[in-house]
Image (tube, rainbow, N blue to C red; front, side):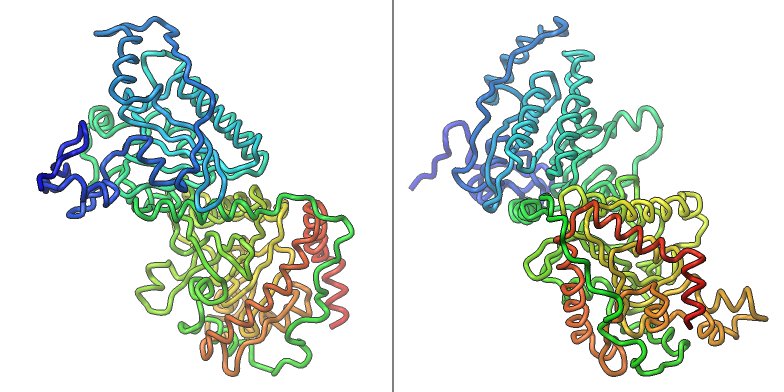
Length: 566
């Protein structure tokens, strides 16, 4: 039998990455990813849509692209001639294909750019079509998914092509105001005006493996700066390391990852709850009664809180929660490893979880900066908090840090301002927030994740204005007085529960959490459900009012009254 290729398609093709000769049908079955080197070849918009959406679910928008030539541009050819040739070559009316579809059963509006059409350039017609797609998402109350592939603005339309960056961005702003999720999928290449507008201003930014993205292209940068660019510059993996994207996803996993993200958006808490909702559980009935808790020396508790075998945030995400999708980056240039965060499920409910991450071995601790967040870590947490509020998800934070990063770089990048902005934002966040202090709660670095409606604390965790060693170095003759300082600081869970700083003490198994992490995870899960579920029925305005009252009670008069009671 003689194999024949479809009309217009060759039987074999050569990989542009490793030069391997590939059977075209095999390449198609592998979603046009080279099975030898993993190179992701560029896809036409119709092919991309068929790979991403549920079969038969795509419905093109009824609007057709309007042919425009606003400035009568002519280079070697008149601009209308180039448009005619692009339409003939691609079979598309413009450089974007728009419509509605379902992905994993979740409805969305979808705009997919096609680099074959004049380099996927952003002109008036492309901007209009994407804007109409965003408006359709707003009208239907569904998320917007953008798949980008572009060299930038369309020069043949002059300044009007530049204006499309603002036109599409305003439509996306309306979606943000309405609490509707926007997701951008960066494919190779995404540059210029597209990269500097809707490709990177979406709530979530995914990059396909091997995609390149930037404002200026490598050739321009080399010409202007005269510098040799680093290896892998502007690739998806480079962008992930520098905090520009939430995740890098291989092509075969894109549909499943989008389905997960869109399912989260479909369950967001956007409806107004009844105003007579009950208050959350009273702090007078904690899981562990402080007055009956076994007495344990404060310094011994500090050592238990710092034990390297104690469960970390990633451990709890694996055991306490039912699923987790990590989101990366602060969008400003960093992805701090000391803070992890993303979308999780708990008893069938979607939520945002953010926490400090230490590690169990010396190598892990060093790689995670011992759980000490940089400004990039605090800004990543801030971005995820705000995203949760926009799409109506509750927030759970897990605190385990000796404090914020005290280094020179952290100060140069605004550590104090980053912490301050987190505290301010949590004070106004219109969604439920529950904090669990799981190990060390050190100073402002801990509070940056702990301005919550309910603050829980594991039985052998600690929470303090300063470390015992730091306190001893300042107020005692030396650091050797750390045990004495620990006792004086009243930093244990029972002490803080009596002071009203903590609402509930979560029991640990015999010994400590390090001795039975699974039992600890079950206790944390039970405490989270008991404290979070009542908050879901509280209106946003009431939540914020109660949260502010909660922290207002720590004023001088109230603190003095508590001291007198002791």
